[in-house]
Length: 382
Ligand SMILES: Cc1cc2nc3c(=O)[nH]c(=O)nc-3n(C[C@H](O)[C@H](O)[C@H](O)COP(=O)(O)OP(=O)(O)OC[C@H]3O[C@@H](n4cnc5c(N)ncnc54)[C@H](O)[C@@H]3O)c2cc1C
Image (cartoon, rainbow, N blue to C red; front, top):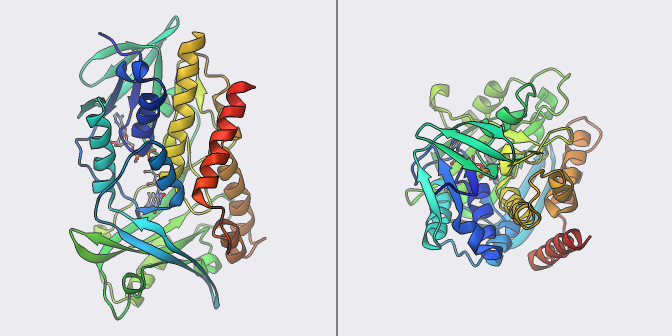
């Protein structure tokens, strides 16, 4: 039998969408198929910083992720000679996405998820009030197609073939933690350095302590959001190479990894009749590029949009953009976009921007989630 809903991508956005469907509309979740071109466990280039927001969404779904992690209590931010240190006990957990995404998938499978691995989405054609969805294996007919297929989303390309997404380039490597050069592992601390602003970088360097195969390691990385596209481009490779040398790392550039971050612009299209985008496929924030928490929360908004579409037999998804904007996801992306425009446009000290994201006194995650669910309820009752 054909599924009613197809989700493309079993990363955090796709699995969170399915888990929210399963929580609020189990019958619909039973008629939802998730496909992924990869076979799990699969890797995903990421620094793996998972904060309280993500933990809270997972708690709401009763998902416990028991995997090797480094718990981090400090974020050390630097801009030239200035610094700011954010401290909150065990605020971040640094995970390896190989384990994290696999644990999420296993949890959903244990609740009855139908997952087709090694199946690639190719195309979708609208036929009256439904879609014909083509994959490398077969064709399905479905009422709703959700693109949770990451930053280089093929679903979004099918939706808006002429639009170029905003992609931020990144480079990341893992290296064994060296106590002499990398204090991050010992101090359970994440370092973020905005100093390469002066070389035109619209982003930062990062060092995240992590465990790779049980070995204390550091994820060293760099991102350039280029939110101000007209400005001269920074030489990311040179900046990164010098940073690695300063830490006594001499890895050849051909061994570095690179994958883009897709950031959201309010002009982007996130839905069409019968189709909507979730997580990186829609876009995350361009200030710090954190996207795991946003992808998990996108899943909640998308699940409610799909549930309401089936209840009202209306698959236009015309209000999906508005739902996102009224949710914490949209509010956070809007706030971070403002910060990114200001700090990467030399109008704000990046440490002041960081203070807004990592403030001295934080809203506790439980309260954040309460706010999110109140906003969601208010939306549904409006
Ligand atoms: C270098 C780097 C560092 C980052 N560090 C952090 C961090 O520390 N903290 C944080 O919160 N965020 C971080 N992010 C962002 C974070 O990785 C993403 O926001 C997050 O992975 C998005 O989840 P997703 O489910 O939307 O997409 P993904 O995790 O990319 O999952 C998409 C899935 O879709 C599948 N897929 C793709 N195309 C197809 C197709 N055609 N057919 C079928 N399946 C398909 C893929 O196999 C994949 O499993 C980082 C990103 C980068 C690039």
